[in-house]
Length: 266
Length: 241
Image 1: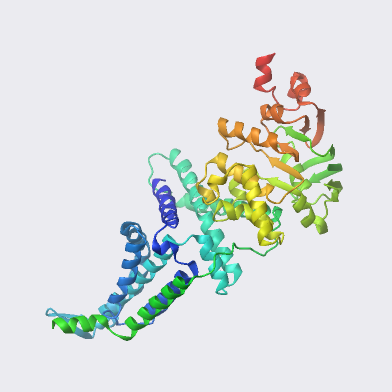
Image 2: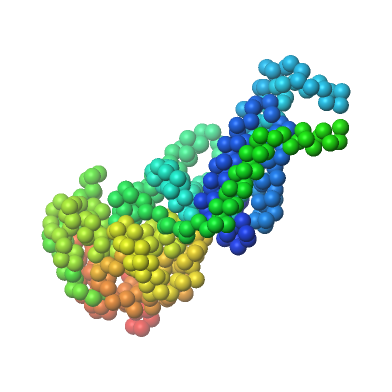
């Protein structure tokens, strides 16, 4: 139960950061959304063995966290949730791609290890960028900007409603787990024999909730079209920010800064 | 303002929820619907706003017959406040939630702003407008849910168990806020003391039928009637007698 409650608090604490008033929070949501998408594309575009080229991109999340006054801890703890997925996705690389790529301090490093590290670095960078975007921009503003860049409304609506009702679903599950444990005191977790009924109940409850929400929406005139709040216009500073950041990404993509810095010392 | 004539309703599973219900409520009045669990209170409200189609009988709300092709007009005129505000509040901020109705009805940006701010002012929730609904207390959520309905400028307000989820102080604040609203109000509730404070008339349902209809003070004092309807004399009256 406490773990689920913790998860609720963790989700909410990141969202609360979006109410900040720092320079990063004040940048127009569109500028932040576009630069984040551009960052993701540039980072993913590196080839599968690239590591040195990715390192300079850490300046972006580090600078944003510093100027946006986002606690490193809150971003890093959420990052840990995403890491196992890419860890297991890349785990087989060192076994299949064993050819030595380089020798580091006398230890041979295979191409497989390089591609594995590259996957981990890309995950860290992209997840951090998205977490920082959420921590500096509220969900409703992001939703409106997603509509403006022509992401289909149905997807944006799905994201919004999932985001809103995730906390309620977790709370529902948390209440059910508490009720279960109160009547099975000597037991850890939910017994496999009960897991099916438990999940089924949760699914039925979520259907019921969805039905009620839909009816409430219909009662306030909803007819399938979701109307999002419009936001302020972009100012010159927002355009300059977007232009500057995207140019910096392109430069970092074209020029391997790690190699240049390394060659100064070697 | 609210007219229901010989309305019956049976759920698809065969459970008969309402039988031959006739209700007539005039403009500006505040009326309560009470009854034991399963008496048909929530079903009646759902029929009045067209959530369930009334296949038997006729319903008219604010001069519009409740029929499938008139539902959009009905929902402009009738505001429904749900029992659980979490079912009703789904936007990321309180302001957006309150503006949801006016936006759906195609109002201009200025009208949306005006209607939303007026509703916020009426419910005295200026301090909450930028907050996320899920972070509010039960009483705050209830006030936001009412503001969200008021923003549509309805003529009739329907409430399903409005005092559930409220602590005593929030309940008292809710009663004060309701007393100031001049709309026609129909309140389905188990909270008989709230009925005594707010309503000039009460309709008692029993097994889907109108069992009694009259002034709350008179009906609630009648112990025989209350027991037959599966109810109890409200605490405040027990103390006075």
